[in-house]
Image 1 (cartoon, rainbow, N blue to C red):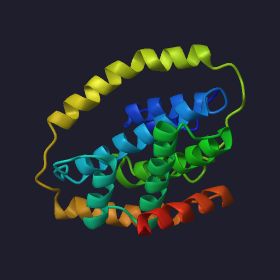
Image 2: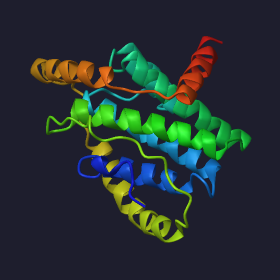
Image 3: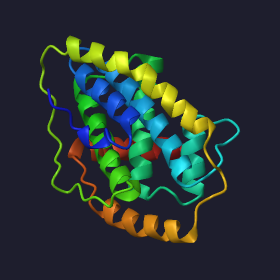
Image 4: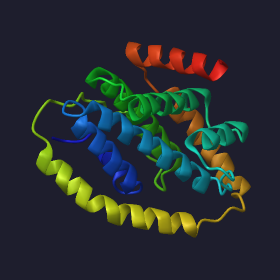
Length: 210
């Protein structure tokens, strides 16, 4: 099965691995799929801290990282809301064992949207992913592909953790910040949301307001 996240492999391989693992678990194990998508979100926000040369919060939970990125103006409203939705649905899966294949497909689409936004905003190459459209996963036997992804994950995580340990936290140049802002606005304007995803966003916003 061809993954919706192939475009991540060159510059963000660990995100590609996690997202594809979620994709392959959609039907056979939606709880695991939602857990992996939450993990995708956790790695994603760490990448954003790295891209902006920001220091992680002392308690670098997913929630605290999101609030810090929101405070620093890194996240557009739409991307922030999608990340909170991914976090909340992942929490429901991990702590409440709640989640269906339909839930997982909706959150996978959210991950797809923010993955495109990440690449269009921060990729070394200034790329346009407008022609890449989301294809709902098909229900097939994915065991062999999952084993391959699992085998490569440890190496990817080791590399990711090494880069995180060496990351700089002195901020970025004004020129780079301006470039990011220009690309960010263009990428944010292209985010598409399904009806189910919109409902999830409303729920996430209500939870944040509580």
